[in-house]
Image (tube, rainbow, N blue to C red; front, side, top):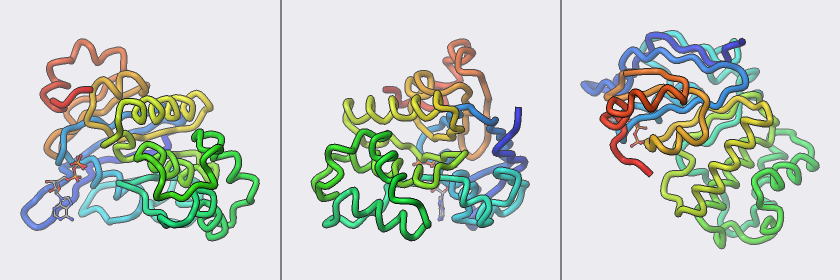
Length: 231
Ligand code: ATP
């Protein structure tokens, strides 16, 4: 199977702080890969490197066969890193229209992604009236506009209420079953167990384990130590 993300020896330092410390990570085509770890483990830093937002200090990173940030790679990757920024007084639809215009995406695709994220009925309402879960789903819709092969989501359920979490998890499962490759970060063991095929566990900047999701049960203790907050 093709590897869409190949990372080896990835390190990112901020002065004395080693945010990411020699991480190896492979995401295969068609899988939903969970990047699990507690707050401050280095998840966001790693995903920011993979999406070309920041440069690594050292290590090898290949995304879709190229370097993060290259236009050919960006065009085939959709991402939501931290909370997405939208214009509060524009509707969800108009926010997506602006992004679609910028990205050269056909209008038709906007309707498709709004359906996918279950926002079609509220599309004409102002963004500021959306619940946090709806805002996050609009962020995923924006990430899907270019019909990307690879979708990278940083803690997409963070801060959501139970209904919002269920909606987001359902959406991610649908993306996976539709054949899309998804890399998501989470600090919730139960969440990655529900929605992922494979899980890499990061703690204090280092990968401590990698498992098929059905092997996680045997490593419960290790996982819980690395990611104590469960949902
Ligand atoms: P969270 O779930 O809280 O977002 P995380 O696993 O995503 O956690 P990171 O945000 O990647 O973790 O942070 C890893 C470490 O790097 C933390 O100690 C953090 O304080 C540090 N760090 C991250 N970004 C910077 C920065 N720009 N400058 C200095 N230190 C940073």
